[in-house]
Image 1 (cartoon, each protein chain N blue to C red):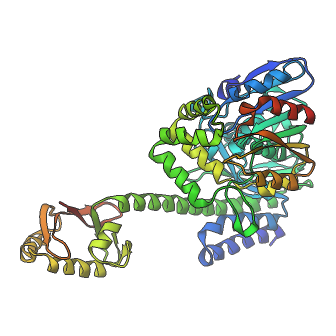
Image 2 (image 1 turned 90 degrees about the vertical axis):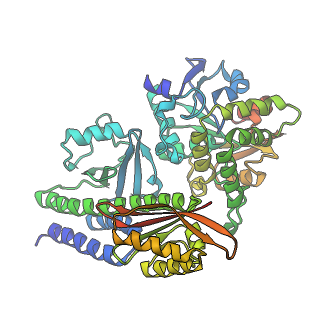
Image 3 (image 1 turned 90 degrees about the horizontal axis):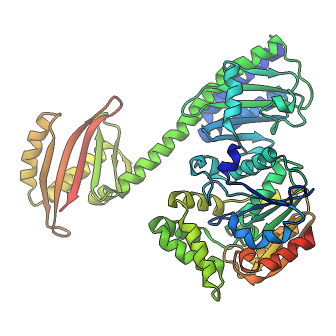
Length: 266
Length: 282
């Protein structure tokens, strides 16, 4: 199946289980970032893991700067995965931008998911002073970020990984993230970062029709706590749980807490 | 005149006025919206075939479909198997025979208008919630609108293509350390990059009238310490328009001591004829 190679799809867990969990990773990492979480669900769920095109072990030849200029290209990829694999009764677990991609997929393809879990996701990273919205970044800080990525991508990856992981007691986590970031072709990473940091899907939140769990961490450089509160207030039928860890990657830094939160929701 | 004739005429009239009176950036959006209003469609959108992996929805109504990505291959296959002619679906085919099923859920009728345009092919999709009788007069109306739509999309795509090209070349030229001055032979246009604007003490970079550039060049020459030598070289240079000069020294004492290696060469292509000056500080 071409899509299996394109997105490096792996299906694990219980193949006869009536329910499926699909895990979507965030920017700069891949499906292996969920390894500590998925083991808790292998008995009772069919589990689908994949890499976003451009990252992990996906087919780099399938990357298109046009298709992935916005999150819509990834939305189509998820819809293709679900349809090609004939998955039903699906709960989508999306970290960071994949949480928002999952949300948009549920809107463009009604009925595709039963539930949605968003880990450290944001509908907009840019502050919007006119609407009193705190996204965490102003345009100047994002421009500086793009400039740093463009001038020396490897140096940027090393610095950014430590800030985003925010686990000073466990430097191996930041080192792993840095290695994963630097494995991505720099031009692709920069284009994807731009499309993520400039997105604005705040208007989509109110239209969500499925139950949503929002997982929030503390001291997340990419997603301030105010963003999770904003999403909870606007997504009908949403629940927010604070995970007791710092940084943008709770599924890597505190997997058992994430597992407990997901189980409560499921 | 049938009511379909009158709708086709109205489309042509209104889109003809719009491209004269309004900005090109919103011309296509306006035209597709007008199509929806005139034909009482419930869904209208453009699908742009951007590359082998990307067919992107543009100018969509309902708006939530905007930017949706589709796989181009099955759609292109359908268009080419219909010889790139307009496809009329008085009834929507079943989902397993409909490559546009993700867009046409809960619709009864549809028209698909392929448009062969450069640099990217497009198609326009129209859909109706209630069944539409697609009579010969209706189809004639659509075909008339199709011709105008092709002009509109070509116009809009070329405009945005040229805007991108112009922006890219401007950025490159302004980033060059040399002062670059181009004076068009048409007498109406000239162009300078940022270092050239500073050298010539102009108010800004970019498009400049040749008269202003010539005046500024003359003043620059008069400030040179070897102005007489420059003048003699210039006389020889301009005696034959095909002449090229390189390693031409222009020296200045004021405001700081500076020397430039100057290149002056004709630029001649099908669309452009003029002279390019490059000042390299040494």
